[in-house]
Each structure stands twice: as structure tokens, then as C-alpha cells.
Length: 369
Ligand SMILES: *Cc1c(COP(=O)(O)O)cnc(C)c1O
Image (tube, rainbow, N blue to C red; front, side, top):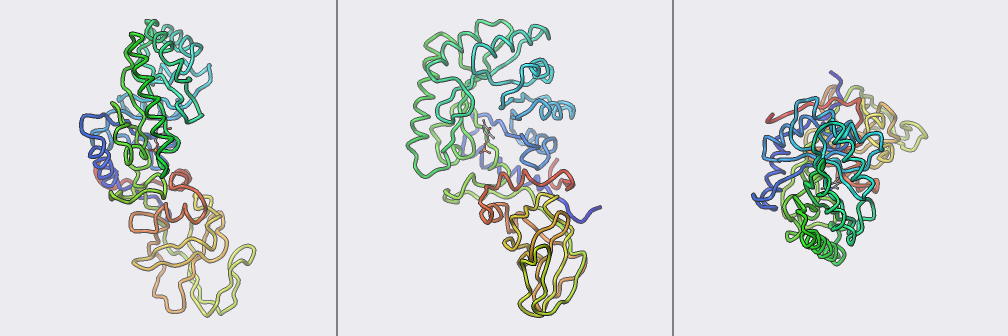
């Protein structure tokens, strides 16, 4: 098998979900976000392990993602978080997803699709309390909830909102959203409709806003072992689930002043050993990490030397290296450096680092399944 692979430590996923449960309380249900192939970790294996560990629902972005889970025999409820095209409405029903509704038009479309398929479709009313992405205005929520209730082919399974700033130190914005959302829920009940499961909390809210967890939480990133942003006190030990690993496949000793890789951006400062790794931006190891990232071999860290290529990357082992061909090299993972370290050096977030590990990299599942 190829030297470059993503080890998926499912025992760490179970550990992190334990923290979710501890923070949200055993009485709340957990809907795990497994969109984008479970943030790059592999949706089916992650979903199976998570359901085994007590998660009761899954959330995806596309119908294809839902389909993959259904084809693997997963029967748990699947929330469809993102908007779809009108022509996909029947597929949403056929894959037994629970889509978000945001206006009368979609309530009608989903009701028609459910009728055509001879079923009752559970939907969630999405309310925009400040995210500015999808959702109805808070003052429309009660009418829409009633409209759903009046459709025999639909069931209002839940009422939801989303927090864009729950990871930020300033809590005003999120507190206002929580307030607005609580009033939305009251208005729905006031109109005589049942809001179903009330849910809002992403990882940031689970970590920071314990009064905003309502009936169900929707963690993503914390289950995969990362804090949503650098702004958090590290009170809980989240364990990275993905370990991107490769091996040393070529070694050479070179004199001082030797240029390394495209653009000659790195020159050795002394006589040294350069190792070549069979990994590159074609695997999702960002070219922006050139001359910035470090890798780990055993206990020691080594710098990436020169530009990362599509399929290969060089590292500088220094003058006195005992590294050999086939030695394992960690690009990121639980023992560090981790995806957060990489994300910081290129100005992104850990989400994008794990999501970007490409299809070319086999996922190897370790731990409980
Ligand atoms: C992705 C997503 C989540 C999970 O967010 P994390 O920050 O990864 O915890 C929750 N809710 C919605 C609507 C999402 O799109």
C-alpha cells in the first residue's frame, strides 16, 4: 500500500464524543455533522462508530452524502443542512433525509414530493437569527411552523438556528441570538404548533454556551478533535482523530547552498541530509505550507524544505540525521504537529486542513468499529 495514508483513530472520536455528552448532558441528543465525508475522515466509518457511541442523528450537506450513508445500511435520521435544487426534492425524500425548510415555497415542494412518494417527510424549520446564510426571518417562524403543521405530508421534526460567532470572545452577538431564538420557539408554541426538536449548538456553543443547547446539539469539529478556533481556553482534552502519515522514500546528502525544489526558494545552510516524501498538494498537503510546516519523525520535528510539489515534498534532516528509508513521518496528527498548527501557519482553520486531504489518500480505520 502507498506510504501516504490517513490513519483514522476512531477511539479518539469516541473520546471526543464523550466530552460532547459530558458538556451537553446525557438528556440531550447529539446530531453529528458528517458532511464533507465527515470532515475528510470518511463518513460511513465515522457515522457507524458515532451511532454506536450514542449519537442519534447525522447531518450532511448533500443528498449524495445522505445516499452514501443509506447505501451503507445506516438507518439513523439524517438532517440535510444545505439548500438543494428543486429537482432534488424527490431524492431528498427517497433518501429519507430531514431537510431544512425556510419558506412557503419549499414547504409546498417538499409536501408534494412526500405525497408523490406516499410518505410523511420530517422537516426542520431553519430560522436565521444572525448567521446570514439560510433561514427564515424570526418574525416569520410561527406562520411557517403552522404552515408545516397544516401539511399532512410533512412533520415539523425540529426548529433550528446556527451561530456564526459562538467561537468569539465577545459573547454579545451570540447571547442576542439565543434570546431571539428562544422567543421564536415561544412564538411557535404560542401559535399552537409543536416546534419539534429545538437545536442550535455547534461545537463552539457546546463548549461555551451551556444555556443554548436546547433539545439537541450539532457538533462537528470538536468530535474530530479540534477547537473551533484559537480563541478558546483549552479546558477539555480533545484528541485529533486524523493522522496524516507518510514515509521517507529517498535520502541524499548535499553541500551547503544546494537549492531545493521549484523556484529555488530554499537553500541548504550547511552540509545536510534532505529526505523526499511521497506526499504533496495533490494529497491536500497545501502548497502554502512550503517552507513553513514541520513534520515529525519519532520525537523530532523537521522543516519542510522548499516548495511542496503535487506529489512530493522535501524536508531538511540536518547534518547528523539517523533517519532511514521507510521511517514513518507524521504530517499532522494526535502527537503533533496537528491540523491546528498547520491551519495557523497558512491562515485557515483545522476544518479546511482535514477536509482537504484528497481522495487519493487511503483512510485506514483504527480502534473500535
Ligand atoms: C457544520 C455545521 C455544524 C457543525 O459545526 P462545527 O463548528 O463543526 O461544530 C452545525 N450546524 C450546522 C448548520 C452546520 O452547517
